[in-house]
Length: 500
Image (cartoon, rainbow, N blue to C red; front, side, top):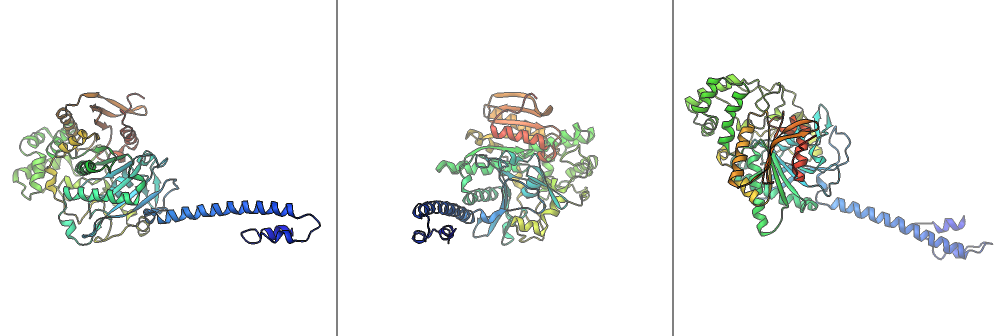
């Protein structure tokens, strides 16, 4: 035992002392064996310690470490990593955009990177996209429940609150909120991605997809255009495709399709449909509204439309009963109130998402700050966006992306009256003809499980259109299973399921 005690004294073997011990048993072979065994064991221990310390140091020094979310309050156990925090996009004006990033549930090292943007303009991709639609969790009182149809099953999901003034994103000084437009937003979003890659360099060369809904029909194509332009000098972005849900692409076509939707769904009378399409259509009313010059004629027409459609019908899904959470109000900005309409009533006062994101412990876990605002809101109350940007069509930009080799998917929840499928379908057909694309997948049904998920048509294997049956303006919220099937097919570049 004396040999053992001496040999293991301290971390390293006591080299000269073992052989000097008195013993009636020859000690040299034993000591040599002990020396070798001890040296080998201690070397292995030190190697493990070294690797552990090296790994720990690498993690602590990694630029994304400070943004790591170890656990959100009330969340169930998950095996994927989450991050959130800020990226400064303008050093002089101190403009910082807030993001939330959920790595893929499986194999994040090989899965693509997907950026999601909600619309408005001025509504939160965190509150609407991540916590109400296709993110990994949904608030339920004090707890979070797992979304079994989260898009991070298929991709690494990045949610961005943009522009500054939305959600937790901020600038020091209110002037940055006063002059916001599409051009500035696209530029800030581009800088965000460039600097975000500095935090997460492992994603820099990953397949990248841009997705979003509603006014993201402006955000996404304009961001993608800047990325393609930057790639001409040096390949920075591995942009593969964009997907837009119920998007604003050409406001006259998109908005004026509302009259037909209202009439075909029985929401307005024949006489109201007639004046809504001949006397004052919706695009004219919106144009007058944002110029503070609503004519008496348009005011009268829209008052009649408002009375017949009723404020108690959710315009983002005309089949759903109210109560619908106010997180589904992201298109209120592009659906201005009529002068004769009363103030909207939030039937669901207990807004789970708003309550959750305004908890101090949640904000601390997210590394979020409230700067310039008293609380987090679904849609910004401080942002002054140039709404005349609505009138600038982004359909030509989408066409230029297709020419550059970027795949495009336009999809529509078929119960949305805000940006109805008929307008989007018309625009996709128009773009396909302009680009000279042949129909590669004729108009047909697609399936989710054993049920019809919607209808689809593909032009030239690069421009796809799909409806989602029974879905609202926010497709992943109302039809999560079908939206996941749609998303899977989009990422893989394959047709939607034709049979079950």
